[in-house]
Length: 178
Image (cartoon, rainbow, N blue to C red; front, side, top):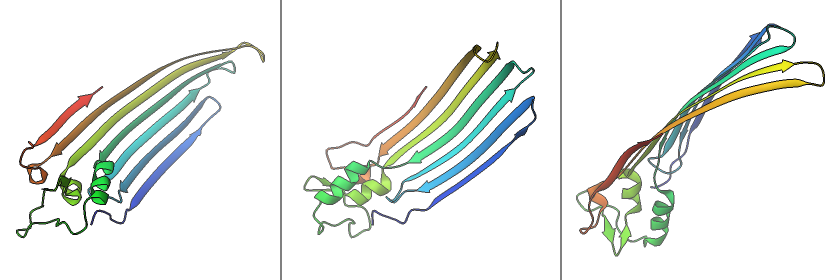
């Protein structure tokens, strides 16, 4: 019940070209990975653009830009798998009315946790690098560069009431970090 056949789809595209003066390399990719544990998956979309401009034989100006978006829907694997191994196999998973059995003898229902817990994470990432390279002669070269990275992450977690014991409260959080 806790495990499923995982499917992974990945598509990558790339284009490059240019002349002696200007060169480019552009790539994009998409990844969708359905996890082997129920209610888990990972999706990522990426793109990269690299350019080099050579206005003279001694000067090169370049730029590299990377963008990505990732979304993860998962569970606390160690908690769920630990509860699965610790919980006796004869303990019920469902009540007669079809609802989940929450706690029995201090053991949380691992199937209920896997199916109803919410643990989502979204990442937005940007990386930019600019550089300048000047060649004085075959032995002396000057290079300077600057780079900036940006990451913002949003995380949501929530444990709904049907899997809690009588002395627990529904818990959750939703926050964003930069």
